[in-house]
Length: 236
Image (cartoon, rainbow, N blue to C red; front, top):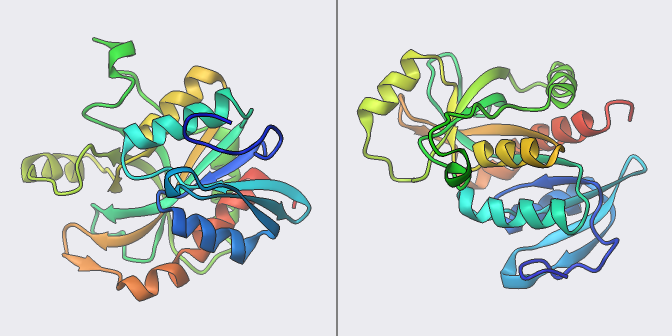
């Protein structure tokens, strides 16, 4: 056990899917995993381990924002031996050709700052996804009904942003969407030599001021979870 995860040794699989919302972790585990067992309830951050097509998988919440994700990802990697970590979550679209309910697979993740800033100091490190996971996810997405986009995203420190000038520049430079966790996940994966990817469902659109109704979100997130699982286990 760790300070934030109450799982026993061996309870966590080498492949971990990480939604921000612990209740989304519960929904995904109940929907996609067989014989799912709750392995963590500390601070209400739920984690479940089961199997998907015979492959052992943990689905564990990360909380909102990079500092929270950093805590859970660090402990999952360092204390429980996680080797593949895939963020599954929502994001806001920043390009006109990206629509609500589309899927974004994040090749890179830009950020103003991350919890790793103190390590990198003056270096503008460029965090990116694992290519094997990325390639497998793109292939899996091609078999889904949801439109898929691959490219750079922005990981923000704030939810209620008041920088329209920054949004304008990111849109100008082709950033597909904004969320709050992936950049630090990619930093940690690089640091520890593990694999990471972010597969995101577009829940709202910054330019059009559109949003997916809350009751529709779970139904729209199924493709994202399946893409993540097929990325982790491309032969299944």
